[in-house]
Length: 405
Image (cartoon, rainbow, N blue to C red):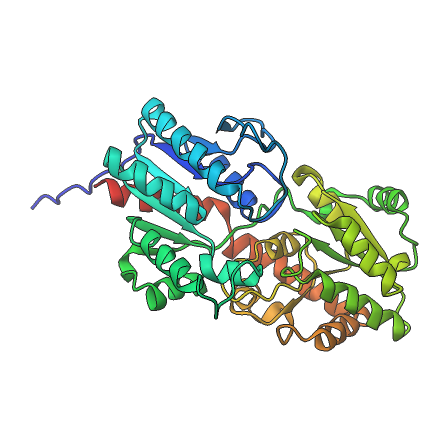
């Protein structure tokens, strides 16, 4: 009796329209996810066009399609702004134009505005919408102090988020915690939820790429004394990311007689946090580099003896820890579900928001070089095996294919 041949996997190249309501590319957060997803989808043979705001860096090899600039507001910082409504109106128009040009098989929206705009394009074109869900909109606004959870606007914001969550045909969530949130709070069916944690580029973020001489030159350039162990942070400089906690931890460590240096890489508000460090008397033990280009991030991170993740949000991702992991650095992090998901039992944890405990966790690692090395190597191995972009890309394509059958 002859066997029925298995159907061959569909390898037809797909056209994907990504909607990114931000100034792509910038060197922080969700931009890295958009960049890596796009690069790996292209490597797999698919066409990706990113429609985004008019500002941002043009990355080689990426098809980035920008809106026209606003006539009355040509400069803005990272984060929420009342001008974003106008930006998103422009982005909606541009997304409709680019959808007509590209004739996409899939609309892939990032952030809630991207899912909302994508929902309109999806319904007009009868094209499946995938929402790349990084965390709760209302939860993020509360974390950023743009929304009072007890105020009159909160219920309306929550209703808007609920409406947006009814638009996508599938969700890619940046953590298991985010998937559970969608299922429990917004009642999204489990079959539409596909956890896709951020991944690590272990080829680019590889500590062996940099020699001792490379690191010595950078250390001299930054003016960091040779006898100090370095605590490294790379990401946005905001209160909700925990930067004031790092400054307080530096003050605590110096008061305890520790000879350490904090290398704080990122933006915005560099001047504000530099002044805060001066007020705390730790400016001589903290270097604020400002913006570090993504291509240079591995080099700068290579200086770190310990990496830190003081973010306390219960809903947002924390993709920066994957770069720390790839660089084989031990990580002190606040004990959140997202950090536990990435680091498992290899993280050194402190209760969320407890600066004294966070300081103590750093201090323990400062005096335990063998443990630092052991944790760093184990974390790099975890990044390479569990958080592979190649495997993640296969999962994304599988989600796309299912929606198209």
